[in-house]
Length: 111
Length: 115
Image (cartoon, rainbow over all chains, first blue to last red):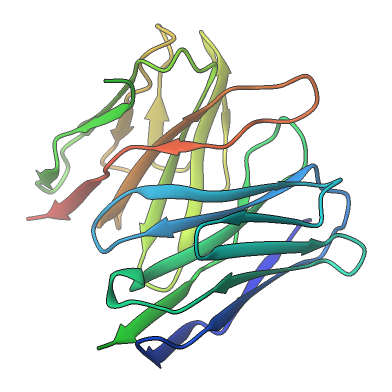
């Protein structure tokens, strides 16, 4: 059974710092991997989707990479801002079955 | 505006009472999902449906029931058999491709509290 792990569970950084969030999955037979953002008491918002054939995707200050063979993905956030404070979740798709989610990394960016 | 709506935002349940959470989408998505979120637990799948009049149990279906009579609607009932219903409930929807589902879109959530 696919398992998705996110490390660290929580992270606190000063404003302006570049940071990396990690996601690992146990079964490399995935179709895509997605990163989501969740603000407290809100739903999830999709940030980036990487197809299994891709190595990375970029959106603004966010860059997500995928190493399917090693079962790893990273989300890189450049020049962090207090508005980036949220929980970030990764999820993998194994086909037309429900996404498998990690438990998330709670990020605090301190001004 | 296209999207997913959930109502109510807050819901209070009395002992022994069944309550129903609403989820509606106008994205023309085939698939809809219900998740429960507890602090430190991440998202846990309750039920999902990929076509009208059909649905499958997720990892924690006991004490819950659903229906999918219309493509746009996927209500979740929390029954009295669910002994610990206090949680944040999220509804999501997605398209289904030939091989895999596309990204999921989430509603704003319903927080259920027990009186």
